[in-house]
Length: 274
Image (tube, rainbow, N blue to C red; front, side, top):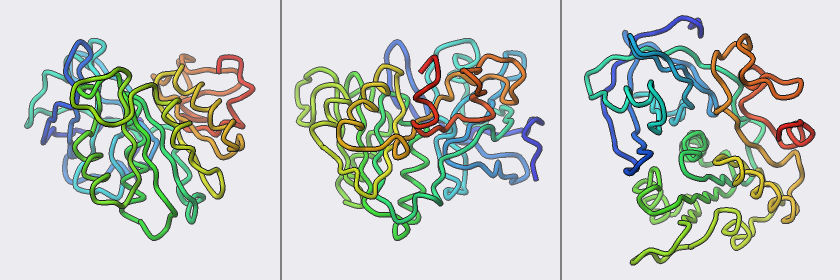
């Protein structure tokens, strides 16, 4: 079993531009040295390190059912992520992890699943979608609701459009403001959720994105009849050390890196900062 506190060497084998602009997003495919596996679960995170630069906690954007590589979708925001955006296939990085808990997919078998994402928040939801697609008979209906500021800011757009076309899931994409040629929903993700009106019967809803989006998504899910225990989210943006020592991710009586980053709303609703 891997020690999650010790770094492993990983090689970048592919880099894909997901979104351009002032806050660009790239998806990095990496493989661990000597064919090792991170043994992660959907919803968990890893610490990416670049020698001489530093480390950053990043959600894992691929399912453990896809064993050929690990994927990380990273927005360029700070020193480490900026350095990572300069990396090319063949470059090496370090990985530590996995950290935190994961989504309880085994408990969700037989249920309908709705994922609701915004912007880079689709990255930690993607492993759920991939896991369900790779074990399709274990789950009910799969609905993917996802939006971004513009069509250029949508992550994984090609694969989501292909998923919509092929039919194993119901996909609903949106952008915040009108664009020439865009014929899908225009408006914010919580509003699109109310348009779609997924049924809460035998259903689990998982949301991730900007904090304000999450709050309105949860509000609208409750209006649609979902219970607190049927709603899940992830708070990995608060994590840093991964072992509950630095205190950065402390919220109320919880440490996000140890008790999360995945939580049901019935756990989160009474926390002082949520």
